[in-house]
Picture 1 (spheres, rainbow, N blue to C red):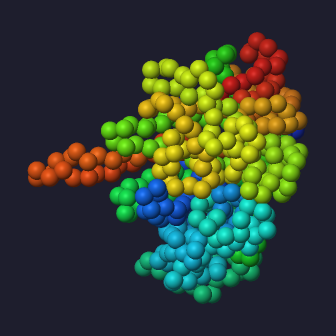
Picture 2: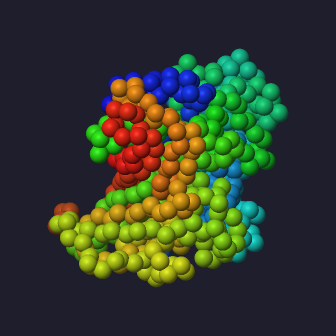
Picture 3: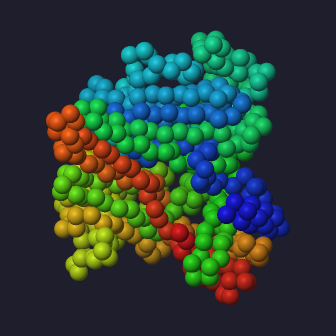
Length: 496
């Protein structure tokens, strides 16, 4: 598989140069190995489960390279993806930064004992999340909205070993010597393009999150989704800026690898997008279906929640009624949210399915099955393991099984079109022309809970809690011109 990727990517990039897609070698892509310039953590929570036990979310980010990096750390609430806190973080070579997202001041906030430099400095008592950005959007001004959402970390710049910034922020015996002297102005004057100082290349940071519930005796983990080759220029912005964000891919080109089951061939899609849009990131995250399992065992009082987060949705939807110009179906209409209609297909473990359409309960405002928030939680039989307020429930008589959520629709709803796309196969045949990516850009995972009161320890029945988590699976549907060896000039590509 690695051989195919290298060969077909080289072919795609060679063809792209001939066809005018300059800069494709730096095209943003989803890195399956978890290293990149942008990390998306699909979900954090400090909410309480159905028994009143509160979660904390423990975040980490690792700089695997030998150079100093500056990253933007951004926390976004889950209803409309509005920022509740961001700051600049400096990671010295091989550094790890950690923080806990905890209940704070009626909402959530972060606490850390990590010594890595940040601008501004994080108080020893922690820093609470704020509601400034979403106040007045009609979906509630309470700090309670900050108690669940997701996290972005974007690499802004790297720094030469001889720079003053590197001297200030690099740990000496575990402590950076110059955090108090480090300023945005200094960093900006010395900032290099992400990865420029790295001998390892730009795939440098990775991270994860643990959703721990101490009183319930459970935790669930998630890996950050990594986007590689996001920018070939410095994105350093001051701590007071809402930049950088996911509209700044440079160059604005995406690369997606896909396998076409119909032809049995692998394809690489290299698409050019309008600069200053979230389209390149949306393209690499697009799925027309996602699927996963659910467990509702009575014997273990099991429950299942799915996290379905749409990290680029905020760049397409506006406030009020009506529809966005592309991709998403409805604007953000106060407490109704911004609803996108979905299809639901459910099966038990013996291939049986219900003969009547399944519905979310209670039905969403559109009276159809829809996901209405930017960080959604889908639960089964109201188990609501994560205690989310952004929840959609699926009632089912199946004790265990799997669910397929479909996002396919008709243009411009749930479609994203690129006027210039290069499609290359493993044999280096290529075709160029428009392409349509079908579905929605989503990331997420499923969590399953188990309670076992039958374990015998020294003759005493002991209550034990367990938890498991599983990344979402999905398919891609890309409608594009295909290489001549595919046997047709136009073909719909559904990829696993």
